[in-house]
Image (cartoon, rainbow, N blue to C red; front, side):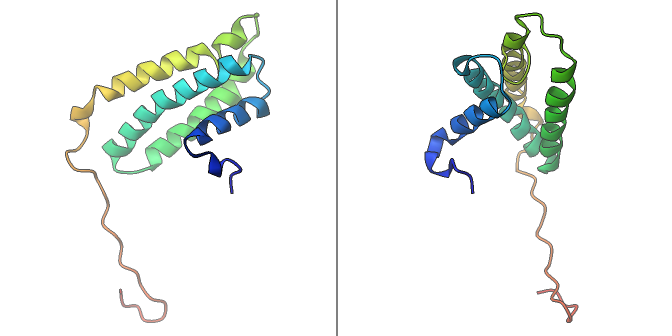
Length: 135
């Protein structure tokens, strides 16, 4: 179980501070964590839109995995620190927050492309082992 389960609405903030510390970011916590929270909020709008549009959780899950790989594995490793770089790049910089807010606004204004009713796949019948008959 998460050690933040009793934080209620502050749980996401506690997780952001944990991520910031674990990744040993070079910007102050007062700068990186609020920008991370802004980024997460902007991306949440886009991921919710993907989920509603597709009727599946998988496009949002694949985006999240790909985003983490690209940001943390490729961009962070190939970025040369020129001084102000740490304030702009990474998940804790102003650049990611700006892009995430723009994406959030873009998808927020596209409700017409979502289905009128949520797409929910029908439940599959359960087959009992040994009988071959659905229950």
